[in-house]
Image (cartoon, rainbow, N blue to C red):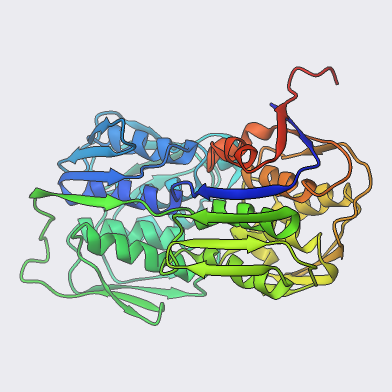
Amino acid sequence: MIIHIQPSRIQGTIQAAASKSSMQRAVAASLLRKGESVLYNAGHSNDDMAALSVITALGASIETNKDSSVRIKSNGVFPIDGKVNCGESGLGIRMFAPIIALSKEPMIIDGEGSLLTRPMDFFDEVLPKLGVSIQSRNGMLPLQIKGPLIPRDIEIDGSLSSQFLTGLLLSYAAAGASGVSIKVKNLKSWPYIDLTLEVMKVFGLKTPENNHYEEFKFASSGDSQEQIKIDASPVRYTVEGDWSGAAFLLVAGAVSGSVKVRGILNTSTQADKKIVHAILDAGAEVIVEEDSVFVKKKDLEAFEFNATDCPDLFPPLVALAAHCKGISRIRGVRRLKHKESDRGATLKEEFDKLSTQIDLNDDEMLVHGNSGVFVKNHVLNSHHDHRIAMACAVACFSADFDVQIRHAEAVNKSYPDFWQHIRSLGAAISDASNVKQ
């Protein structure tokens, strides 16, 4: 799919998409709590649908309703097939692998696209310590595992992703962990662990004591083999609005007009709500309310930002920095290597086409802003990365020439309504897939 973008002024109000971080955790918790759960404002991105597919393969039943809610019934992890596919979801594979390992049945865990090249050495190292046998393809998918997982005292490295810890916390709770702890060194993206713990509490899962994000201790109980019992009363959970997707809309307002995004909570534990600080530091007008943010374009200046705990913000931050005067510094580049693309290199390649110089210096990215004055390069490429597609689009609204973005369907991974939403805000966008190249 090729999207054609013409110079546009962005203006209006839009409802944020559902957060796939919130949605996928709620889907996993619905499987583990045993009973009935209803998820309101349920997402429908590729990653969300992959999560629902996983729990269906693990024995849950799902009913999708017209009001964007999903009803899930579960008796726990009882696989109906020997194979589970996590699609292209990094959170999905990292969260569900330990959950799947709760079963004593041999299972194959596979994925698609870029997920097939992401490192999964963590499981090769950790799962055997928890009584799980595992074989991988030299540290990559597919994984062949056989449980059941037994909660034990363990220490893990959290430097690659907090998502591995999320999976262990959920599986420990479901297995009735008692008097054991997970110690973590070098934890990154810790706000997402706050989201995991919050979801666990809502769904009635046993929640560990958080000791400064360095140790998560499950209290002792009378029966160390205690399992989660079926709860007759359904849990009702509203999936949060997505700060990750909203970041692109807010940046669009900052560089090309004005935007109000509703449905994003100021009290959210999502790490990507920090985008507001960057936009403020760049000099745009920002009004933050309890469940919405308004942003209006002003003259923008270079900013500094540490994205180590929110690496998904790099693409919208680069789009913002390209419109600033001066050199913006963004830290946390090491977190970008194993995304849907090597995002540091991909951002450099695509924004170089827009006369925006990007320097990658170890863990720091320097973006040489040119106040949104771009050369006339008409063809950009998403590299099949959803956030690169959105960053390229947002960056080009204020250009004085037309742009095409190849592989624009990549947005379906996290924000399938992105093109529709941005068009409703005034963007001149059309599907140019049939245009002869």
